[in-house]
Image (tube, rainbow, N blue to C red):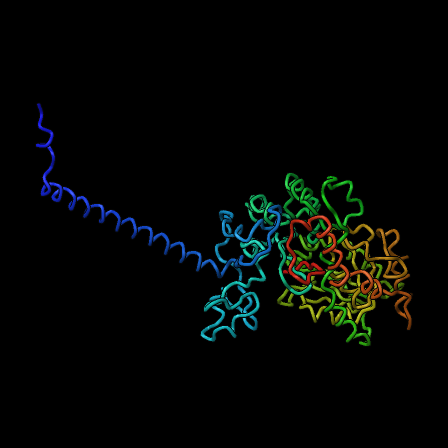
Length: 466
């Protein structure tokens, strides 16, 4: 029979067993606590560093999680960035100066130097809470050319991005797919014939990509026949980049309304391909081959037109595109001009010449109208046709077959003391940020009002960053 009592460990044996085990246990516990503290510190350090490039989400309003609206104040904290997206945000506005990030705004001056896109919170300058409603990667996305930011009437960003051109970077479409449920992406007419494939032989076109662009949730377009191109589910509005930001040319035109009129017309060639005698991408878009043909008529003794061909010389001012000999002494050719100098020529002209076809949003058209200048416009132009009301804002021509008649009408109407054209009236009644911005805001609110959080006081939306 086994004596159970003899197998029990003595008090001395129990002590010898327990203390070594306890010491080992305490060592493991200490190691675990150290690892936990390291992880906690590393996460805290990462989130602190990230505050300068993403908005704080504190006090965010709740809402639906669909297409650009955070479902709660914590949604952005769990976001993932698109692989390959730029790691750094663009420069931030500190109020009166710029900096690479908000924490660099103060420069030792504290809260007084922390304004604009940033705000002083606690003892640090961080991204402003006014940006809570935009996705943390918003400013990284719009660094890519194809993606354009949108602001409201108070200059605050909204969680809407416009696609203004065909995708440039190889992974732009993947980026769009990655963020399309968190940000409202819409197309906008701003580049060549976008969203349609460009007929320009010097442009890159991809028929497969066209299907992507035509299927954005919404599109600001300049088509005469949108039903022939867009699927029925796409929300559309007749609007383009050239509808906006007309305050500057309008003010310039008002200040220079009584400048002496030296020229009949101004033609803007963009940035012409001068080295190849104006044969290339820009020259095709601005239809310079037609301009040469038209100049033979315009410079003839029958019309004796004077004008300015902008950006028709190289930047060194040493070479110009060839024009008919009959035009020498009548037509001035310039280098690429800054905005004020360009507006200065328009102020000294009677009308603006737009012969182009492959142009979805000719900004010079509304700039000219805002300066109270009528247009002589190609009826076949892809965008901008809506600005021209014959006899009121200018004249159309179809091709050389009716060019003489249209040229005669606009010359007769502008060379006298009085003109029947009222181009500025069209702009003041229909375009510019006040009118177009309100229409865009109403459009977005009607179709995506349950998905977008608008900053308080928003009553207009304006494409920016051009």
